Image 1 (cartoon, rainbow, N blue to C red):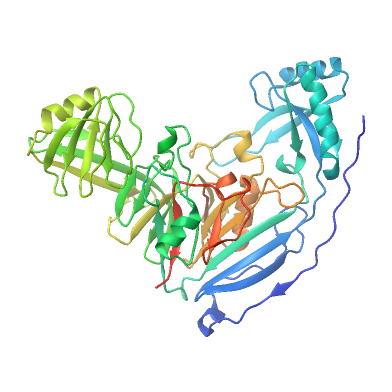
Image 2 (image 1 turned 90 degrees about the horizontal axis):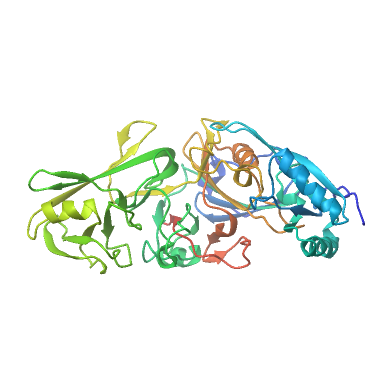
Length: 489
């Protein structure tokens, strides 16, 4: 079998292209760092800067070189590419029986703020250079014919030592010079997925990036639904996952925090019921609020109480119909349907109280038209220090913490300036992406004192001036649940 040692990379010379900036921007309180790139062997990056608008600078950054190659990874009985040592050794014996030479690799997933480290083992076969992927595929085919489940892996995706390369886009929005505002958008409806490009165009935004995670585990027609808090122009359109990181946008300010939402329905007879969700699929015995932004029919198999803008019940119906403009629908099934049938009679009033609480301050947010909220996926930096809250945010796996993926990152500086970055990945030899530790280090390097990871992978997209400027790993721009938009004055 052919085995190759992967060679070292080439140094990259520094280059800087500047555009003429307005006088106010020359005193920027957020600046691109002069220190070496923080990832890999800390190479000197090349960067090209463009002034997008007053107070908004865009940097196209490239760093590192390609020295990683390919291997074949053997899958464990669980279907994962890692397992316990005894399981890995048993798989290695199967590889030997198939006539190949395996290696059992010990991998330590690093600890994060809310989860300890984890040691796992992988079974790998062979090592080939970047140009020899076909040889890795031939070995994979032989092992599959022997009854083993395997995959060809690019080693740059592992999350272990690498020289890169990295292809990054960074937007720095100076709090003192920027005169526009920030907003969130769910596109034409909550249920539907749309591209960042379409949302930027519809709002005439200066730029936009993809927002938080959306629900890929629901009905295909409903997969635009955000997983976590969404507020658009002061209106709660998706409930929070309690404690999950989020960015609160108010006018031209941005704050990273954790949120909790509560929605209570109170009938005119004084009876109260907790509303379990907003604009999402329903489960047994749940009461869910649907707004006109939902963009789909209510679920079948329950009861709908249709409310006008003042909370008056203008109709009680079997569920499974659209939400008309100017109305909201309280939908219930099981015990929740019973509550509606007993406390939401025609022409009665059912008051729906919505509260969004900042868990860092304990105070409720004022749901005014200039308030927007986008749910993050993982907290990365808090008060200037790396603090990765992967478990709290539901992403404490080896794949999410250690492996490299495309990333969309958002941070705020000490003076309230905003930093948005995309790191492209899954493109062997061109860009490797980042893991959570690297993403946190990168945002600190850029000057963020608070930072979160938004959705990433194939969802990562940055649109500036109606042009997609990064290269999504799917090959085309993916429809997403929501977007963060930067609007002009």
